[in-house]
Amino acid sequence: MQKKLAGRIDMDSSGGLARTLGNSLRSGETLELDFSSVEGVDSAALALVLELRRQAEAQGAALALTGPTDELLSLARLYGLESLFSFHGKDAAP
Image (cartoon, rainbow, N blue to C red; front, side, top):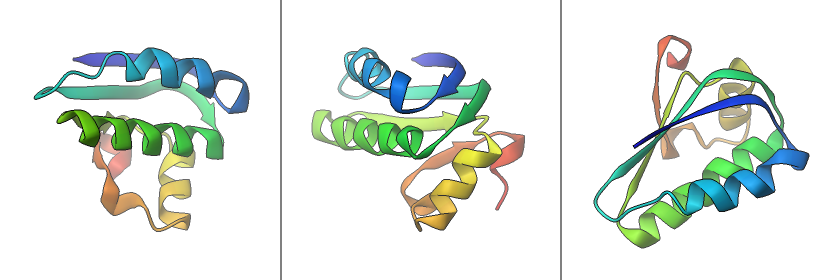
């Protein structure tokens, strides 16, 4: 299942997104988050994808990220977390 995200993902929006996206997880399926229309992120976006990854593993689901923003990739690298995620898209090159 693909979910296209848009706008800014930060402290103000991440809580609602966590609830909505967490409810989309299904055992045996991959939830693909498309970041190609996201305008900006902060560390709350990284916390969001970490939480969704945790929930996905607990439910036997998978999480994939497409079109991640440069900021999200930078944050993942800064914290040494890039290996935890499946990044896809032109901006995902190491």
